[in-house]
Image (cartoon, rainbow, N blue to C red; front, side):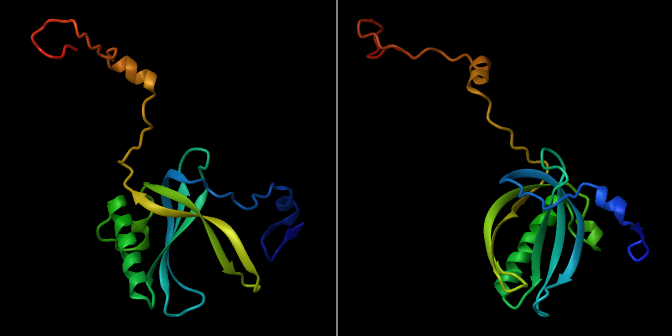
Length: 180
């Protein structure tokens, strides 16, 4: 059944598997890229504005998952502004942008992010208390930094000739009080 207001066939759309709510991204480090960057005003205050970046995970099990990041660069509390500007400046350093001219300059450059799941409590628009877990980006690093897992002990033993522990022989006559 074609809907002229929506401009598509609703019956075909209903046959498509729905994506549903995205699961939280587990704590860890991920390669990601900002797909969009927008300057937005906060809904509840005309004194608050922020940069909203939508990051997308680029590889691994969570490839394609999105995670929002906000930098509150206009806020009544100067400490919030100072922290947000510092975080945004660090993000720009990580992607190699020193003097952005538009929002596109903040996008399409891969970066390494650290995600941490945090409990978030708030009052919903319907007045009900909401207690949920959100995935939050807590750190940015340039993509050139690699965190390789430590080598297994067996690999280290094969790379380095590990000698057996030294033995003390009190009967040895070497002129030295200790012979190892």
